[in-house]
Length: 121
Image (cartoon, rainbow, N blue to C red; front, side):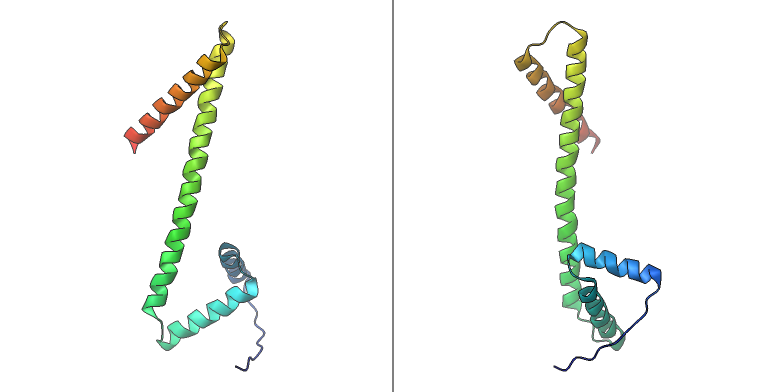
């Protein structure tokens, strides 16, 4: 296949969008531009492949799902740390510093908060 080189100028907003797409797909900006041109020309010529569009949507949904799992883990970790801070702050006011008991209180507080979050959702 013979390749022809073209030079184009993009407005700043399109350049930013192109760079964002490249970063999300972990590809070079040039590769993202090539893909954009291919998809755009296919769409304009009426040769847009519905199966390819579904594959692309499925890939995006998969990425969103993966990010959601990471967000859930981070949220749970943050909640656990907040519960631990609460329990240790309460313990600092009192005279008890029994670590196993405090650990159990942290776990109990964490379980209560998760339960409450489940009731809200």
